[in-house]
Length: 397
Image 1 (cartoon, one colour):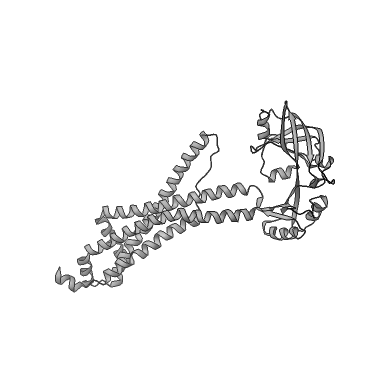
Image 2: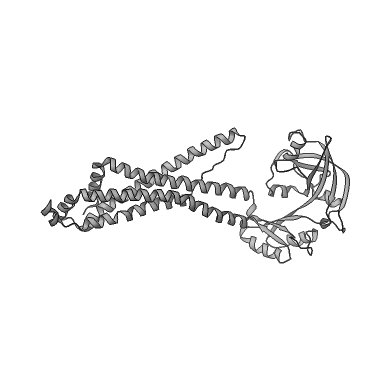
């Protein structure tokens, strides 16, 4: 039978029962939009967390340390050996010591670091004012916004501020068998980075080497490409050093969010099952109401497979239309929710973010699921319709 003729019959049947058709379609739309809304929320949160962890060139970087081992040190010899590896682009280190800082009649214990401009950039510290660390600048420091607030200074006003430090270099980072204390070191603030976690100050590592530091607390190693990370990692670990890679953290985040996405999507799929039960009920009632019509069509020569196509087509139309409208409604609702969240975030002094994320892959999967389950749902009433005995119907009707 001509497909266009079947579509006309289907259109006539759906249009003749407008309210029932609308209610059935609404159930599918609500279910699909709920799945889109909840799943896009889970994907958005996952993307925000992942982006926070993987800022900049994070997938090219390895964090290298000694762990608890006393047999290896992160000294210049070790750095030179790592730099000589074929797949290593560059290496940067940081020296972490304790310091007592005195400025503006305020004394405070802060974390003091010896590093370089590259390491600060890899750490995701953005400059708020002034300049970053320079290789040839001595007795200059970059402080974070937390320390500037402690001094009751704005990032701009902190520039040029003189600070006096008493340093304690731990024995693990010097050639002595005990801590080395260096007092009365004067530094000038040349830059302020955004970091409100705890008061910190950074200087070029050469300043601390001049004071007796001989080893680094940690290194960051940049590989030539992401594909070479594992090779570089194995080469470094073979020397007894310990490494950490952001890819491991991302994998753990993804495992956690898989469960989160499944839980949220499950709520939407429950709604979809309820909507499909409503569609199944609609098609079954439609079958009972059209028994005489089906019997007459069979007597006029319509084949069983054509009758089956009518009911399967009706179910498929519900799935396609419900899937498309559901996707549209779900995206609109998530955009509205995102605007509301950003409104309150900006009012509280935060920055606007996109909490909802739409993946083309997931959108296609949701639409395909809507189409497939609707298609399958139509098979039972279609099969029942083909089993109608036209002679028995005419005899009793």
